[in-house]
Length: 335
Image 1: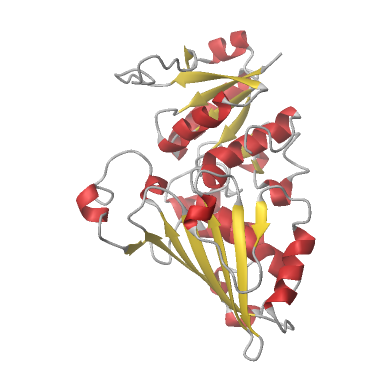
Image 2: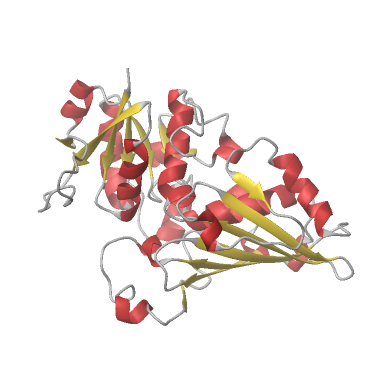
């Protein structure tokens, strides 16, 4: 029998991407969970039948026997809904930042809000499978990583684990994202006239994704500089990461570190030395593509990491986590 899974927030960009991926997944039966009043059908396409819609009610969740509920909702909504979904017997994969930062103090410092579910914050497993695969299958609550930290940590952590980075020189991450990363709710900043033919930086030095990079990589805040920038495109993240390399004479030496760390990983693709990915290579996929360039004389190194922010940065990674939680092949529905 197919496992029943529910999607809350299915009208948002990440939620809609979840519906698209789960609709083709052979092992699950998706349901749309309505948590608020909103006009309009789930799909406006004639002849297209969306998944069945149910109220986001704990009694309904329990009665229907939903195995997993995805929360593609703002952090405050996820904090409100997650306890009820867990009490109803469902496991939860949250796509917001509500349960990523481990402590209420860290959450308050970066989100400027008081966390209302500290026990669940402490319980949540960070859902980056390449590093936490052993913890995800047994988790009740998985905090799906942010899009920027996914690309950054997949590029940075293997190098730090191998002691290949001169940490005294710091790491600079220059990150660019498509507009869908800001969510579907309209704002002046993401309106067409503000974005088109434009390119801008935002949340300089205080971006709320920075602590995720620090927690997963082990870097101190003083060692990491991150700037997010908004591209006039709909999807995709490309991060150009600068550092000084220790004891690496060529890009091949750094690539050997990645090859060892990611051997057998289905969603990390490495490029030949001196070649780097672009956004077209990862659009609509769950891949993270990584390319390395190194000046052996000076030790200056550049790593380029690219993902689709709505797939590996959100919905695809959530399905990857679901596959691990339910015992399906990790790539099911994603290749």
